Image 1 (cartoon, helix red, strand yellow):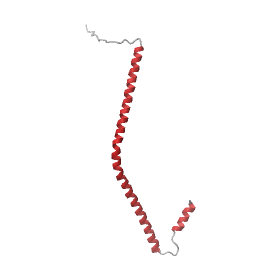
Image 2: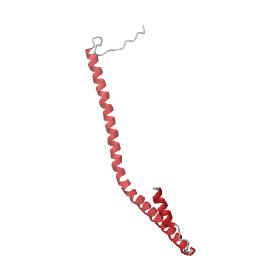
Image 3: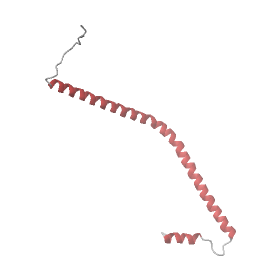
Length: 111
């Protein structure tokens, strides 16, 4: 890699008898090309962002539907777990001989 860098340094260095105006002009043209490339890149980036907005707007509805579906799924899972727990508790109470099923009435102890 170091050899490659030194090779490019030797290519970029102006020749000892080169005209200073040509050297300055070539560096100015090189700088302008860099600035032009940067400007074109920024314009393309901005254009990409602008085109991304309608796509995101369209996908927003799908994302909302997916979120609502996952929310409904979580809620259904919680309800199923609660139903399973209550049925299991009911089955355990049915098998327990200490539990008496039926109606009851609270009597007033005021005499």
